[in-house]
Length: 446
Image (tube, rainbow, N blue to C red):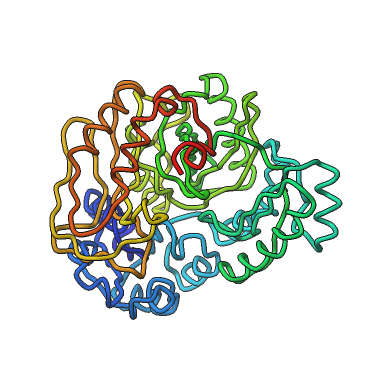
């Protein structure tokens, strides 16, 4: 087992990893920026090291400072969490080259799956259904126009190394494609320092379904079921749930099997998630792969009883999975709401500030993942998500009722939040009757 892990992240996910390490008897080292000196992940770790100023580029994205902190503190491994450097193949390579165990897949697979066009090509070779589109990145606007005419509008343009809903535009006509092509190229360059883009047929009104997998270093892999992440605003997830009400047991087994087979074929290890678009006829298409822990992993933990973070650490410690696919059962229903410090009435503008009052809900089947506390200052330098509220019930109806109760009990004073907006979704008839898709929030609530 690994002995001392440096957590290359902050906030609730850093706290989540620290708690898993404590249960495994592993020491932890937190990194922090000058703005995070009073953060909870700093207080809970066995040791904490400042790696730079508030701006992420000089702290949480500063590869050299983070690796130096790991070496100086005697760490044998690094857990990247999600976001920041979690899908940086260069950072993973730097770690492995100096003998630090990277808690995740190999740098080569991170690089391969991080290039959305190459990932699509590889998944197609592995027998996973993919959306029609460009074979690799687009070389020119003219190529994009010819391909769009061939496969038919609407189409969607995406940054090849994108994520987080950035570098994406939909075009319904040739004129819209011309405008979108230049915009996406520029967004890709600005956000990911890489202007490569690709094109796909746009699946209208789909459900966004992702399959969670775990794979050890001995060729064993399992699917932990699917999550429905269709409730999104501008391609960013708002509420996630599992199991999905549109996925039958037969389809779940089929999607899980094809995903596991693909992961074994490419030699994938550790935790990973394959994201699919599912159309109205239950056809499913590979969209992308996330080679890291997902924000919404707690809902899968709730229905399977498997601690995904602990399993990540055990796999990195060269342990075999102690369960096979036949051991995985889905019990009940789980749902997660992302709590953000933002103002929905002002176009979801981030709202940093000091938390002057806080009450977190509790009770049977209620979990809160957060790093905030009364007196904590939410920084303007980082993502606006400040907590995740997770519930587990016997079925979807009970989960919704439990989430509504928990949301009503949650009190966060001093900053604006999206709590009322989430309550609005939970009370919407179409959400309650499972009559929604990825366009729900834009169509019904904005």
